[in-house]
Amino acid sequence: MVRPFAIFDMDGTLVDSMPYWSRLTEEYLESLQLPEANLLDLREHVAMMGLQESAEFFQMELGLEKTPEEIELEMGDLMDHHYQTDIPLRDGIRDYLEKLRDEGVSMCVVTLTPAPLAKMCLERLGIAEYFSFILSSDDVGVSTDRPEIFLQAAWEFGVYPPDVVVYDDAHYAARAAKEAGCFVVGIYEQTHAEQWPRMEQICDAVIESWQEAIEYL
Image (tube, rainbow, N blue to C red; front, side, top):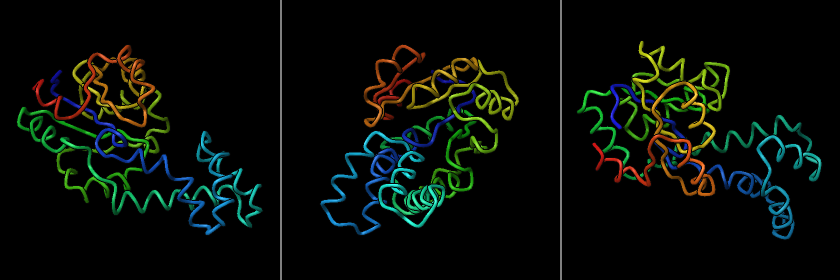
């Protein structure tokens, strides 16, 4: 499983941020200080909506004097606050990064999160030093469901994709990394539990936890 170069996803892989994303629409509703009865009804409506769709629904349903774009930015500000203050590391990841560094592995982060915010979060958590660079989807112009972003990271390292292992918790990113030619390790994340059978099919290896991953080194 060890390769001389490694790409790490951030959300759900390095940091335990997915529960915060799952609760974001509820947190935004609470910030509006609505009556509890209204909150319960709205929570049910947006349970399966994405961020943009939720913002459009709130603007229409609540008659907010804001555009959906402004609402989406406010929801983004709530997540920014969590990245800067209280999103924790995933258990065992620091020890795993230390082991890889001891093995001489060069590492980077590829993420949907804007690079400055990702850097701030990783610095707060004390693991930014392990990574040579952070590459966000904003930098490349494509999401992590496209192989181009992993090819770009390999290019930044100055190597071919087969020399690179990608660690990710999302099936769409794992598939894109495989299409790029990388060796892919899937890491289990509770919020994406329903994806796990698909991850087992896509990935070259899968791990339930970072403590388990250390045993392979």
